[in-house]
Image (cartoon, rainbow, N blue to C red; front, side, top):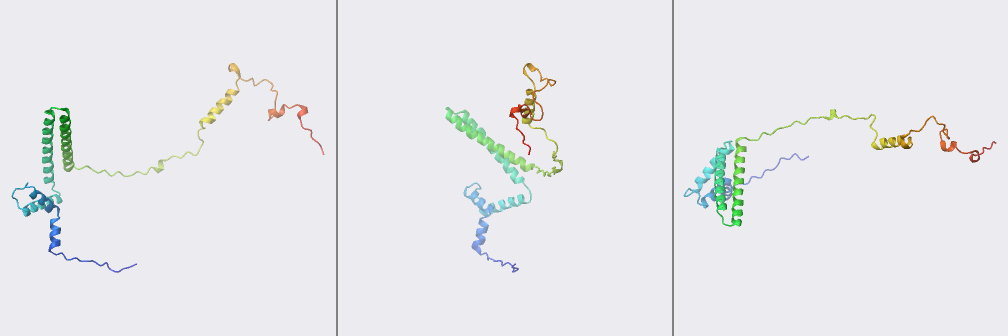
Length: 201
């Protein structure tokens, strides 16, 4: 076993690497998108980055107020979009326009529902239930005793009982004298001429 200490490589960070690390943070990337889309007006880029960093820090501390406000606002926007598309569908003069606008309206309605559902899960997280597995092996019963006869055996027994009966439901008269006797009836009814002659030595 090699007990030599692990060698750590320390890479010095120059200005270019530091800028790349800072510019690729989620706050910088999204601030650049907001500034380029003119949604922030004349707000400077550094101010947008600092504001996004403040909001992400609050969420990391467990403060979900900003996220909840965002979901509520988005649900209202999706609901307004649903109303607008539904009204466009009802005012359509042909069936194709009606179907197209209603399809989009129902998609907006479904997104609003999903947004509110996500908001509800943030407000009241689902409880995770840990179910302890019960060992029920001692409750298993093994029957090594007499088992029930299979259906074939019961059927053959019934067939044997039916053979003991003659026509019209009359049973065999057990008091009558049988022509054959002994353990093997077929051998017991042979005549003298068919019997083997025993030679005595």
